[in-house]
Image 1: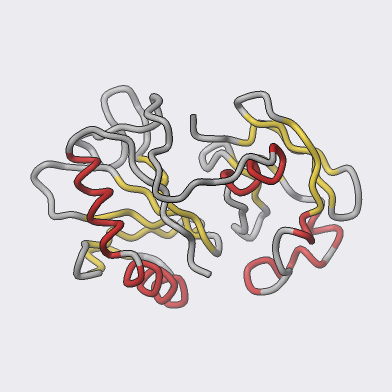
Image 2: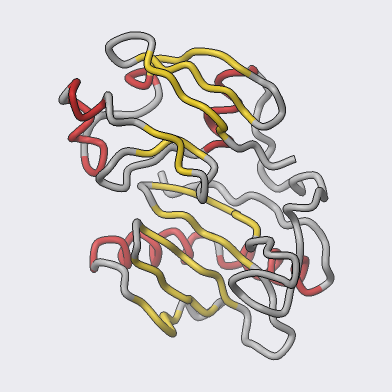
Length: 195
């Protein structure tokens, strides 16, 4: 099952209580998870930090500036269960291969394969399309062909484009492996975020 945050409550200056779709629940101090710089710099302001909410579309916590945290990482911190990179995500109904890159006939979204710096990377397959993935940062999106790392469509800000290029260049082989898995209808493998 892909972990999704279903509720968040602020319990201290930078502490949050999270509950997940699998029933896991616990607290963490966000200062221990990320440096408050870059897209996370506004979180230094306690009033801004308090604006945390559950982004139902992303299945995680987010702030008004688009900053969000990977639900896999949050779930791992809360439960103590390590994330195993390179393994399938379990083959549940959230893992799929449909003809439409946005959703299949049942309205399911593409599988999330990575998340970093506020960028969410998804992949689905279309048997007639070249291998590609989708990247989203706030309301901006991109379609990126692999293994060339060619941006077919993009409204991403220049800085986000640079991050996606750097990440994809490091993970070409894994992206191609996920594409083949998607084409065969198998669960996709998580790919390490940009570090």
